[in-house]
Amino acid sequence: MKIAVFWGLVVAGVFAGVTSLSAANPYADARATVRRMVDISGGKCSAVVIAPGVALTAKHCTDAMPAQVDGLDVKSHASHPTQDVSRLTVPGLKCPCAALGTVRPTPDEAIAALGYLYGDALITSRGEYLEQVLNTDDSQTYGLFMGNLGPGMSGGGVFRIFLTGEVKLVGILSAMGKQGFPGLYVELDTLKVKSW
Image (cartoon, rainbow, N blue to C red; front, side, top):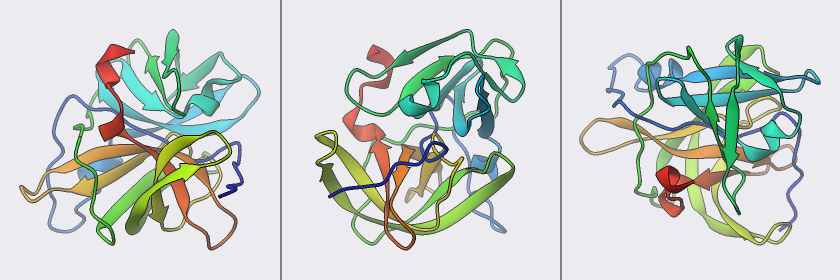
């Protein structure tokens, strides 16, 4: 499956706290954990705060370092050895922090992707989990998300509402297909986030 990867797409988030379910918008608390990321070349992505001073983003968003998250300098980054995800160290970056969910959604389950479209507007794209797929471009497995995604959302978060009512980060946006096609995200249940 060939997937067109756009510079400013997909991927986000790691967590230290739990975001709670809000009656008006179940993803309201999760929105506060997603931040803007801009690199030295002007490239725009998203990042998810998972702990004070720590955020997750897509690995391809770290190609043109140095970068800033919410206007704060990224001190360092550690990229996963095989997946399109990086952990950022950003001194001064404050919570709210996303809670990490390590259980993959079931097919057709409602999930939401959150990121900064074109680096400007924070978008909540409600959609559904389709399945886990193997991307032949990089031989890695990804979660397949059917929803509206666009440039700048890379590094943003994919969130799921658990039976307990908690909203947790389950993935980082990585790529989107052409118009009308599903996007890819790195599933956090396949990573050992603290080991890299």
